[in-house]
Image 1 (cartoon, helix red, strand yellow):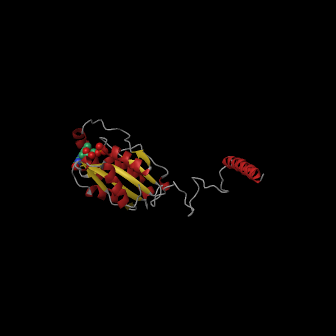
Image 2: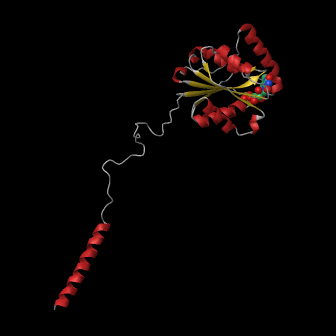
Length: 222
Ligand SMILES: Cc1cc2nc3c(=O)[nH]c(=O)nc-3n(C[C@H](O)[C@H](O)[C@H](O)COP(=O)(O)O)c2cc1C
């Protein structure tokens, strides 16, 4: 009799145990009272994902005759996310080759130097005060800043006062010291960062890496 009671007790215990295991499986996983939202500010109160550059809001303004500066402007835009604007001529050049443009550019540079008259452009930026850094991309013409970019700086010089100007200059081979002198003459109250010069030899390399390193050098985190 004692043995039968013991076996009954054993079977009952096993049944009860298996029931309690099944109950546990249906228990919902514990939910924390204040779940961490993926986009919530981090412990320091910083908004994650809002990569504010130490240089503030940036604008990219470029002029390009044969496409090089346009391509670099696009790379810069992809790296920084800065807004981008093209400087366009009121009366576009009728020339179709560099050679045809040489004499036109010479005449325009002479007119700037002699009479202070700049070729007309369409590009007007009203809200320049919103930007802290303005990237300027221009080809070098006869060792000087291209005349349409000179027009842009001439007509926006007042609004560019106190802002950082960061130039990317492209040429076949000539150095850019006179282009920087043009920038200083046109915007004497702006702050010029170190420029980036991209000549034809540099174009065979990794332009994105070149621009990235330059950005880091002037304190802009791509
Ligand atoms: C009118 C004109 C003048 C130029 N003068 C020079 C020059 O003095 N030295 C030089 O190395 N390249 C010179 N170049 C070559 C351009 O600087 C070079 O092709 C540049 O990459 C063009 O840029 P873009 O394609 O954005 O217009 C000249 C090109 C043109 C159209």
